[in-house]
Structures are given as structure tokens and as C-alpha cells.
Length: 203
Image (cartoon, rainbow, N blue to C red):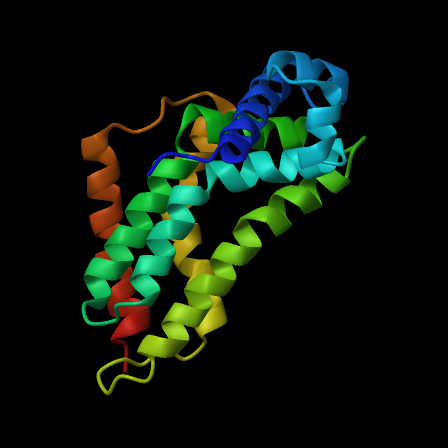
């Protein structure tokens, strides 16, 4: 499907903002500089985003778009729990280990002391919604006879935490390169198998 002109312009702005934020940080980048990077007029920029905070939120949402699409697909199909968890895990791991996602995470950590709202924007924009959707999915499959999840909220948090693990922390610190396709696949399979035994089918 061909994007509408307005959709294309909005994506241009988000791409320009992403580049500027990651290259120069949040505090030093002005809306004028973002407009130049897009490139669009300042009037056009403010037509789509009324503040730098709103633009930063859009950057996060755009980054997580494919992840939420996978979540939506899984929510529609609870027939194969392991397959759905694997699909969700794959989308999540593919996202959090990208250089762009790691860079944005580092950006927020480095600037949150002076701009505490960045941490809130990052959390409200993606992790909170993802946890909520995953919890909703677990509540739905908990209605199946062979499923026994004592605390869907805790189980949702535990699943994402297992997927991040020590590996994500090492990548954030730059002491380890992002995992290869095979490494991610092995990690995901191990987490889904362990998680299913401990949370999904535990009695």
C-alpha cells in the first residue's frame, strides 16, 4: 500500500528526528534543527508535532511498530501458545538488540537526570503498553483448561525480563556485540521452553 503524502512527510520528520537525537542527544537538538534534517519547514513540523517531547514519543513508537503488530497478531490467536510466545519473543528481541534501540536507551539514561521526562516518555511509549498487552494475552489463554498462570501481571514482566537478561545489559554497556541471528534464536528457544514450564503449564 502506498503511503499518503501526509504519512510520508510524518515518517520523514521522525527519521530526521531519530538521526538528530542519536547523533547530538536530546537536550542540544532544537525543533529548528530537526526541521532542517527532515527536511521540512518549521510550520510543517509543528503541524505534526507540537513539541520535542511529542516527537521523541513518536520516535519510540515508530521503533516499536513491528513489535506491537506482532503482539496484535498473537492476541488474535491463542491456539498455539508456544508459537505465539516465540513470535512475540522474536519481535521483542529483534527490537531491543538493534543498534538504534540500544542507542536510544543509552540516550535516555544519559539525559534523564536533566530531563526526567524522557524516562517517562520512553516507558509510557512502549514498555508499559507492551506489558499491558502481554498481560492481556496471558489472561486470555489462562481461560484454557491446560493453562495455569497464577499472576498474569508478574508472568508478563518475567517473560520480558528473561528475554533481556544479562545479555542486554552487556550490549548496553558496549562490552558485547548484539547477538547474531543464531544466538538470538537459541536464546529465545531456551527462554520460551523454561518460561512455559515455570509459568504456563505449572501446576
